[in-house]
Amino acid sequence: MPARYFFHHVVVFASDFAASEPFYTQALAALGITSGAVSETGVEYWNPEGDTPSFAVDTAPTSEEVTRGVHLAFDAADRGAVDAFHEAAIAAGGTSRHAPRHWPEYSAYAAFVSDPDGNNVEALVKDAAAS
Image 1 (cartoon, rainbow, N blue to C red):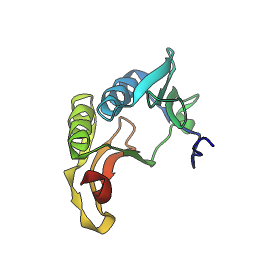
Image 2 (image 1 turned 120 degrees about the vertical axis):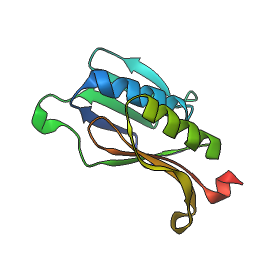
Image 3 (image 1 turned 90 degrees about the vertical axis):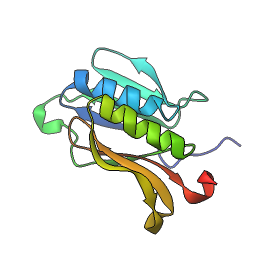
């Protein structure tokens, strides 16, 4: 039986797609997540092995519909991927919230970056997966 996922897909609506697309494309590439369907107003990301679960960034239809205040956490293969995510996200216009470090209260190594709309984007690897 194929794996079932808690989420099938998640979409955030960006105020400026031209700023958000390179941020997510570069940051997620560091985690092995690729962009699939790309248009002038949206992009969808998934693992190379399949298109589910997926994450998408679309242009907000109106300024009132911009996604703000969301915390997104992406799974990383190891600590090096978390470090690469943080570096790539900053280089692509993100703002560091927390540099990569171990968070013992969550049994994880994680980094946090704000996307162009101020959403909290995290990459993490749980301690058991990091060993």
